[in-house]
Image (cartoon, rainbow, N blue to C red; front, side, top):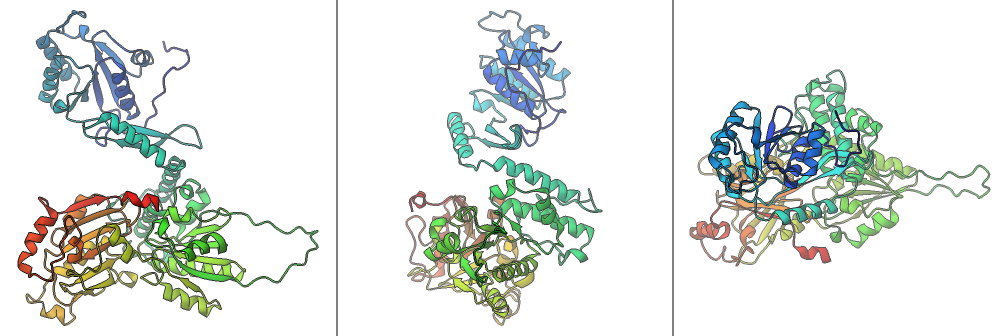
Length: 610
């Protein structure tokens, strides 16, 4: 009979995966031990939906005894197993008997897929060997050499709207190098995340559900937002407009947009999405394809107000660059436009939340609903929204990442706004093309290494291919918006279709000029200037494999190609132009060391002070 006493311990809430490959009631974990640590392992397994068997030698903590009373775990004593040691007070249990009984028990219970030994005794190594003999992964506390898996320090977030457990968890592991430190790192991560992060996860879950169950093709979406997760900016094939979409294209577009808002929208905006917002996001045929971030109602004049109303003021439009991402790199002009002038901010999706957070709460912010394959439509919608707001007398700030005229389509917008009666003011910003490399320790020009720099794009208008500059030893090439197509870009750089490169020099193919040597240094800079910046550096021959090994991509990203990539690394190398190509392989080995690529995370801590 279940106890009716007050619940003294937290109730496990399902849906929290203990391991990616071990989840659900088909799996059972055997925990050998009855201490507090065993109770902690049992609770984690229960939240993963696993069956839990506790095998102990008489001593059981209060929590495990309570969970056994509630039938959450199956509590068993060694004494009931055949051939087990029977003396509970024995200082040295019969190791042979215990291993035999454990082996028999594992044979009789084939559903056991994990074993965790929390009580460290002299027979722990022997018990671990029995698990290995049965091909069952085992974890032995404080004996990492015997462990097939380890437990991360985890935290499950509380949903602020319900007060209950959310689907969001974070886990930190030091792989046995410092368990206590892992707990501290976990706390640091949790404290640094925004308070509405769990709410954002809840709303994205609802958005995913709507995306998969919208329209006549409900349930037919085979490609989720996690498909090709390493390349979130890959275009949606064949997308033009919602009226001409096939069912498959519609499904792909909806799930692609779920991935895009997950990647780019600020957490507060995600957490505050209403169902109407979600339907608007997924519709694809609404005239209002932008989405408000913070809408403050306007006070209406009283009908009894006798104050003369002045004629409506003429609205203004600013085209403003937000810099590469770090808020301290905003110009004073941009900061003033956002904080003192704006009535409406129309922001590109790549502008980071740290910059949007500077905008007063009374200012409406809309984020462009732009995803690969929909760039033209989203661009037109933002320009129409700016003109409509300016006609109502509002000051509109059209906010772009980096500098508006460096692949920011500012020219198109200037001509559009001028044709509609508004002369926009273009406010330059710090271009990510020049700022991101130095955040990665790469000078775009350097005496003795790089005498010139070329900025180009890896993808043309409407996804068309572009011609890349050919190889010049003394030149740095910066490729923007091409990381999602890195295989094609790198292939065009190093490919020599004619064998001698003459055809490419004459303008054929995707490159104008000589092919690049395969050992040419290249760096991929992702999220340049932001705290989660990542730099993956290698040679053109190995960079695709290097980027794949780094895991999921972090847009926006750019490529830096040329010998300046290694100029300031380590002790430096500024003799590239003074010496011939015969020393290039030696340079590469000195730069990369034993491996074929290097990966660096984060930015200099000094940026926290400026």
